[in-house]
Amino acid sequence: MAMVGQVLMVAGVVGLCLGVIAVAFVLGMRTKSRLVQGPLVWLQRRFLNRQQMRSAGRPGAYASVIRHRGRRSGRAYETPVGVTRAMDGGLLIALPYGPRTQWLRNVLATGSATIVHEGHAYKVDRPEVVRIEDVTTSFSSSDQRSFRLFAVDEGLKLRIASLDSEEASLAAA
Image 1 (cartoon, rainbow, N blue to C red):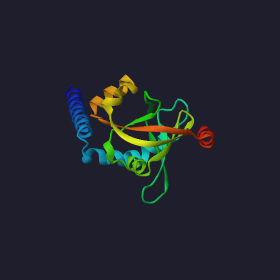
Image 2 (image 1 turned 180 degrees about the vertical axis):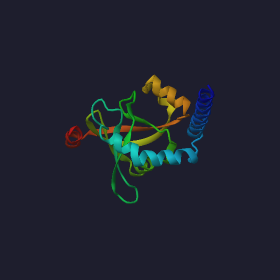
Image 3 (image 1 turned 90 degrees about the vertical axis):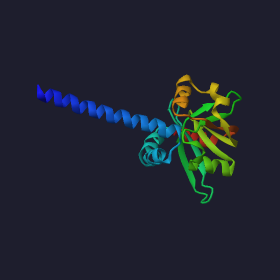
Image 4 (image 1 turned 90 degrees about the horizontal axis):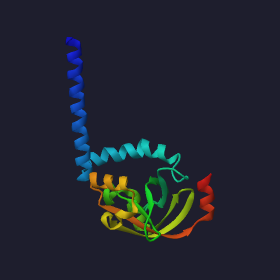
């Protein structure tokens, strides 16, 4: 009996610790704390993005791909992002990390990029950081709930300049 009590006590402590971590994570994301976002960005770059890039941009994939150039290096980069269609026909990307991400700074500096979404590559231009509340109806209800939970208040709006048929065939491969 004593062993069962100890196991339950340990399980309770572990549960409490996980709860504290979850609350700290949500609060850190809501306040855009570098203490929370820094390790998360590192983990995402190092491991999660590589996993997502295996299917990103293909029909039915959760993530799309934004192809952009480094603002200083000129080097080509690909980053998985969540893309949705705007009501006006453009594309929208929520910015859960705020405006400090490197890919966003690159796109804003160059003024253009390529988005591979649902197997099609789109040349996009006129990037504009917008308030998420102004474009919220373009996102799913589950996305909207996540935005409220994590205090996502900005998005990137892009105008579709053209469909790149050469890149579209590469995206499908």
